[in-house]
Length: 410
Figure 1 (cartoon, rainbow, N blue to C red):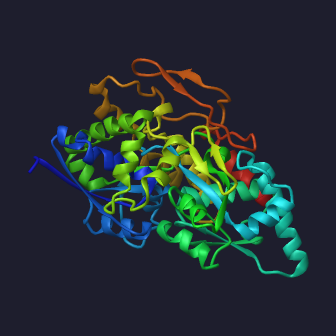
Figure 2: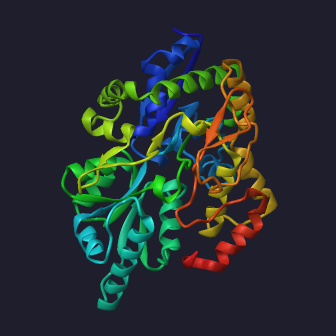
Figure 3: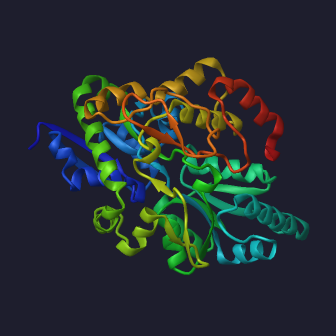
């Protein structure tokens, strides 16, 4: 038995890869960590089990620690996010019937979310004119990047997420089955569940997270704040193990082995060939194999860094959609949920190129750009929103006000 035992909850998603590789490839053991991974079915279960002490850490939706610290969880829970588990990895998938209608309205490929959104708006307008019911889209949790990016995309395309469609919660492993059963018309979820639905012949990938907001946050390592304070050395060891695992996951020559590991029943339980597409950024969309730039980043572009500007953008969306009132205290709780200070302290001994800043203007980089780093050379970007907007965390109040004023047409 290793000196430091940690139990981590995870969901069967491709972006659990860093945790899985840390255990299976020995990175955790090399840091003296005995890492136990426990597979769960829903994010609500992850949230509740970490709250009652079953897990010290967990694979977690990036907004979940923010929501917990803002008092939006059923049980009192203080969380921190000292490391991100990659960037991107999501897609918006629709039923074959809905895609056919969207295609007739002008939708072509998933690389152009504005055109896809315009086609969806036309379909919705036609349905409203015919008196048909609202389309129903699934997201994995109310406090998820999926919910916020779906809403952002819809609103930027002139679709009101509150009135024009219905958004409901479906756990990730059930999304493909929910579509097959006709319970939902579309969903936003992480891989492999988009590919599972496509492979079953029920769906078409309409667009992807990396097209809506390139190099954007997705999952984090959620850590109980009390445990982190009492076990700072153990946490630092875990962060080093996860960073080294992320570097291994990011190497293309390791993707076949990683897909084989993830395919095991203890992890994702899906064919390795299907999982490989997300790792390589080559997905079967339902209209053929499509190559996506930066579909899922494990380590490139500071993919494991917990940017506090990411935390504040998620907070801005919580305010926008009425989950929490805006105020200085709430904004500070959101910002402080992500902990780049712990990240830097843990990874400094590795000599890694770590961002010198803790926040950045999101959506400002249109090309790969060298940025200030604690050592070595660090390249970030492009990181743009599809509608050309930028989020400057120093202008949080005006950003939130602008979204409130713009409403669905933002």
